Length: 173
Image (cartoon, rainbow, N blue to C red; front, top):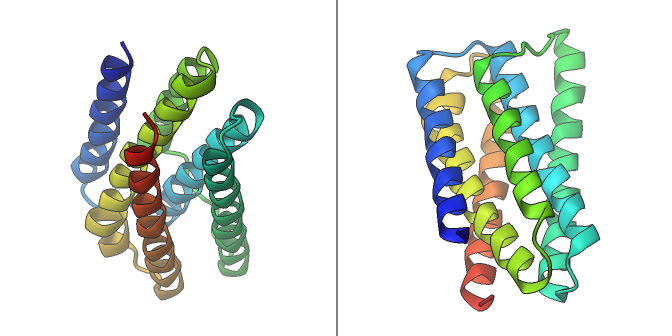
């Protein structure tokens, strides 16, 4: 069952990336909303992991996710305020939120090692999808240089998160 849930998460995450691509070129306000939403999703997942996990490595990883994604989102909010841009809700942001809500519900039903494994495997899949969307669609589509720079900085950090999650996933059985 866990494999099926993770497979569904991967498919939906891939469709989210395809939706971004299908929309051709998202605007900077849409990009800002997508990026913020993606970051907030990982903060929420980390908060759930901090409440549920007893595994020291998973807890430390979740603390890193919470800290780093909050920091990037704070920078994004400061930038849109400075630029006087209102992030624009869109189908991609909505799809991300819907899928994240389903995944949090699925994870909430798990405990112990099953939760830890599912959380970390979801983090691997999620970071792969977000990193792919950043590299292939969001960064190339961003018009504002400061927004593009923030996205590039985020991508560098999120690639590190992906490697960390992959390492943890290989350790958790």
